[in-house]
Length: 510
Image (tube, rainbow, N blue to C red; front, top):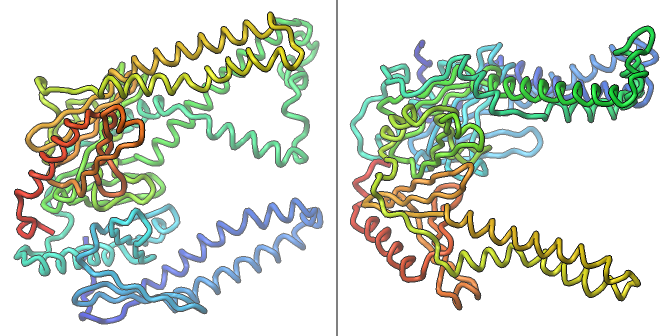
């Protein structure tokens, strides 16, 4: 990759002139569909191109002018201690973020900027997307130069002597997905989102359709053709229609799942470099994220009810540099445990040992949770038994409802007791483990050293019953273990705080 043009410190810069073209195209894309909907809704489209063309031309001119003025008023500067961004046409906004607060610099290319070779640069501060600086749009070489410049400043502030190496350094491939793996992943990502969107659109624009799509007799006529043999089949026709409907739904769900997976994870590559884990993915929107390993606080290993039977799992890392949309970075979307193990090792974490001592929540907590899950139905049964006779209904009629609700309450309580046996936690010398779930278990692994806080939480009932919840503070959220006996909770908190206190954080990398 070519070198980014050098710039003197504290020199104000503008983005590439092509960035305002990209902004205009993207704004036009967002404005065209509402304009067409307004033309259709008001009936103005019936007047033909005499109205449509001037309307679209006016929208295009306005968006181009606005994008140009926004580009002229946007500038940024790399100072000695911070990065500063100024923007705004009428209301001028200036933002400054110290290099020490920047957790990561991610590069993203959606479809339109990618066609022009432009990159969206996002400086993540670990505030869950609430306190981020973005530079839209710069060339790919300048984007790489910005990322390396920030890392060089951070290295200088930390007293590091490392040189600013290019990002395209030799990397060790940890995980990748080819198209076959993407298609398999898409099958397990079955979704009917597209069907719901199409159904909603059909309902909104039904006046443009040749017939009522919800009229099954019209569909029977279209399928049967001359002779209407399908309509004469009676109940068999309804059964055939139901089978066809289910088949269409299944095909739409599979196609939607595969399409979503391919557009999100196409070209997925996870590599290990000297700067951390580098993840690249995306068909239309291409993202390039580097996650420093020393900022990874926890791991999340998850699976699904069906995919678990085939040995498929997913792995995410919880880092100080959070993905603003998801709250974590997915590093292995769909892989086997053998494929995930090297990634876990690269982060410095480890799966729980085979002989680790797992602990269940306290019996009091499990019993209370089971009872509380049944309380609504028990109250409903009492209400049915007491109120029905007063409302004039015979007591014999209320009896089945009361018995049914009580039976269902018992089933829910037993179910909750059963599921509670799969909520477990454990501790080793370096990590905290929390596992929950039966059919689709999830395992959370947190580093004792990198946890930000440890809190013991007790409600009124927990205080009386002698148990508590342990809440560990991690970036962008928390890790909670519920229903621990109070003495165990205090012991775990003491062990975690002891691990943190034993380390001189001033000697750790920033």
